[in-house]
Length: 415
Ligand code: GLU
Image (cartoon, rainbow, N blue to C red; front, side, top):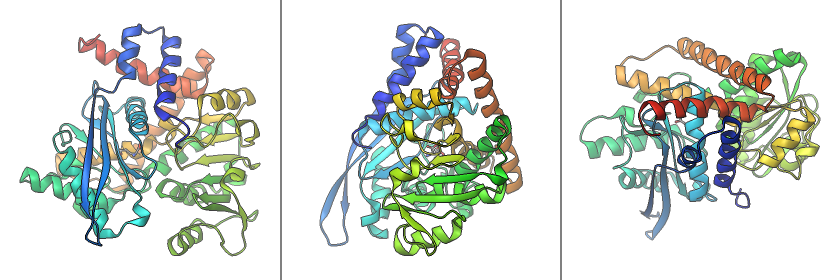
């Protein structure tokens, strides 16, 4: 993650799109520049009495289409440039899903795996105090991302409400159900990706009930993807991995057993009946569907040539570098690009905002049905654009999203 500069990649992707759309250089420069960013130093009292200062960021990339939206990531390798890239990708994600939202992202350089619940709570609350001026239900609405949880969202919502001196449930999404969370938000990112895989399989003529799947990363997105591949598509997950390594089993891996193993041992490695495999080996397995669900930079010029999957469904943000994109496209691999494949999370976050604004919760069935419609329609518009223009799926997704953002920028008189 550290060796690849995600923001450079995000900017290269815009340049490529600008070339396809023949955008004005000034407009392209605007699309590549974050509108606003805040860098904060967050002192936190640790359990041993010492004070540690954490670096935190909130970046709002573009709010032409509305209130900015995007998660907060707690990660030891976080940098301002990863947050900038992720904020830009949120803009294209929201536009592609046709949500009336702009894009933002937050991050704190920390390792939650080495922090107690108390330390995490104090860090979460302190982060909100530090970025209070930038966020708000009618301004910028954060959400969970890598290593941040519904409980963290609850603390952050509470801290914001305490400062605002009124309940402000709509300041953040991905909250627990009992305090304004949306039914279906927990597995929304994975579920949205599974709907895309279902559509792609129909188009490519793959029978998903006979298909094999490998999942890289076993956090919220990876675990639910493994579970839903079996539940919704009847497919067999043959390999899973996390940051410590992976497990493979031809007969199939039970998502719940892998979840239990990770919960008790901190890793999916070593499940009974499985063989050990590295994360790198997993990416090159001969499977029908590969789901990168970890962090940026998994598929690069180095290993893209060895990817054997027919479908690469990017649940992670930025798992494939531009060089790898070209290699996969030439090989005929069907890539479902990140800001299409993982748009289910922010889509249900948007549903959560709507429910919070209206003080009227929806049923889980309603959430799922609306999510399916959004994802299916987004998938097919990307596929059609890709075929019409003879460009890859990522470029097609960019073309649709960027055209939508630029149209609004024009209507608002910005360009
Ligand atoms: N962190 C998720 C993403 O990257 C969700 C963002 C949100 O719900 O606002 O899409």
